[in-house]
Amino acid sequence: MNIQEKIVAIKNKLLGSGSTASGTFSIIGSLPNACHSLCMSIVSILAFIGITINILPLMFLQTYKLYFWLAAFLLTGASLYFFKKQKKPLTRDRNFIFINTGLLTFGLPFSFIVDYMDFFRFIGLSFVIIGLFLFFFGKKFRFVDQSVSENMQSIASASPIFTLSSVLFALIVGGFLVNQYMMYRLGIFGNMGASVVSTTTSAMNQLSQMKFTPFDVVLAKERMDKNNDGICDACGMPIQQCIDSGQMDCTMGGNKNGIGILGSQHIHSDLKVYVNGQALDFAKPEYYMKSSFMHLDNNQSKEDASSVLHQHAKNVPLWLFFRSLGMNITKDSLTLANGQVLRNENGNSLKFYLNGQKVDELDNYVFQDLDKILISYGSENDTDAQKQVSSVTDFAKNH
Image 1 (spheres, rainbow, N blue to C red):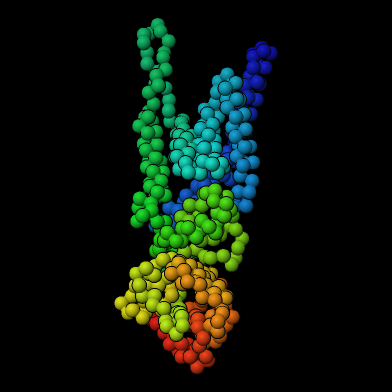
Image 2 (cartoon, rainbow, N blue to C red; image 1 turned 90 degrees about the vertical axis):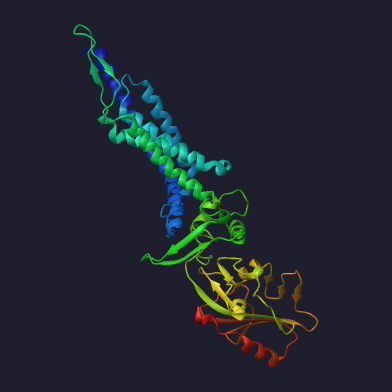
């Protein structure tokens, strides 16, 4: 080998090493975005079959997702440059480019394409499947020599022992799985596109299977996407993914007092609301199951249906129940479903009782199992108030 051939060999070796190195590092750079997108997709799919997961230890990397993606993009570009410059391109580097392109597409960090992310994930996943398939099974492809004549050179045929149908099969399976996920995201498996959420304990004993109501979806977006850009303010992922995993408050926001994941508990309390001496009747269709987080059930007993609150998550404040009914409650006022606002005025006052004891407010109270809650508005004296306290039912213990 002469000096020129040695220089060419060294150049090709450097180009191959550069392509491999940049390809490897671009995979690492792509992973924080693509991995989190994939994890959130898995969370959604698992929720559909009865498992909710809310622990993503690498969540802090999402703060730097754009920088990771740009670094991966530049390194993939470098890989492509080195690959093109090689005299004999390495199959390994080609596979890296396929995988990197797929990961970059799958983990696109731009909020303005959030409505089309399922399409980009399908395309990205397809490229990753092709790259991985070639990476692990590419060596099983070989060229079959076909002799044209004894005096002619052998011509390499592109007929692989591991047939092209195997590649197509892998793509079909991958496409089917992605399509199933897209159908789930569109709500085809549920009624009216509601998000199916099911939660289990660590021992995998199912607690409940619930759906976000339209009210829950609106409130979740209000709490997690305050600027209404379709992206969760806490974790930076599409807001629908947080909703799909059962979150009213994103668990990545560091808010330990936030509303828990739907299904994280199931407890009950008894409730009575009086207005000017008359108990409000909640045993009506328009009041049932307005929120899956806290609601009234349509039970056989009218009094039971009117008074037993069901709480299906941790840290759910009482105001959420009233708001789900089109009402509102604060320390100083009670707004009824017809829009009438009752305030402390003209000898009337709003009074709160918890387990027979008068308290200053209840709007932000998170009730405990079997609590007895009374909210009363009017000019009642102590004797009347005690009669109302005694009228609070004791049905919660039967649920």
